[in-house]
Image (cartoon, rainbow, N blue to C red; front, side, top):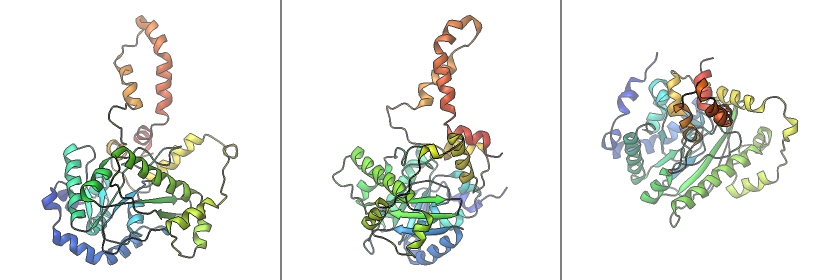
Length: 343
């Protein structure tokens, strides 16, 4: 099994060790070359539809919607300035040789399962931003595998990072048409979080990411190609998408839609090689707000009950909950990938 020896050794470097001010400056100098290399390595047709007018020489926090493993490279292929990327997928850092290109471009590793690693990664992002380079992160913290949400709950780190460094946030989303191996990308205007409370800021960012995803879904590949490389201002892109008439009626769809969705998500994950079923505990780890229980926590008490014939009354009482939990498992993408990732 191939191992990225150099990257493995660098994963646990602290904030002072992982890069220098000189290293950050060098990456800014070589950014045009790295951008061309990364774009050539995506292996996909990348079409940038919308991008804001950003200040020359200014740094930003690019907050990206996360839809497929390759969207990191596609986002970096269109971002117009040197940008370090927060990478929270240990399996790929350890084994995928293409991660060396991200390291050369600027990479901040985080083990999402480790509190200490998360703290150190935050310090590294602050260091990069304070040295006038930008950061690309994915505040959803996970690929959006849901069937009915254009954006899942956001980790609050993006808010704290923006507040501490006084750097505005640029929402950016890449939609992947894997049947045509094409990626459509749109970014909206920077958001200044000054004056916002955390909840208010995260709602605004969530709405921006969700809107970009929705608007991109209304643009067909032929519509995108017809622009002939013209990159629209965010307001122009909004006007374009609002005036498109792409519609899909549920009654026009046939078969088990949920099963099809799970199979499609597996296909997208399978575009890169995974090396262990254990990777899904980190890879599919979504944010849960403190004080709000998720479904697994709600039903966890069911695993502590002794189910036997003597407890027939208990079983009958709990039967609806047991049935409901089994139904919930059908929508558990982490469980599905653990069971099917190598089939």
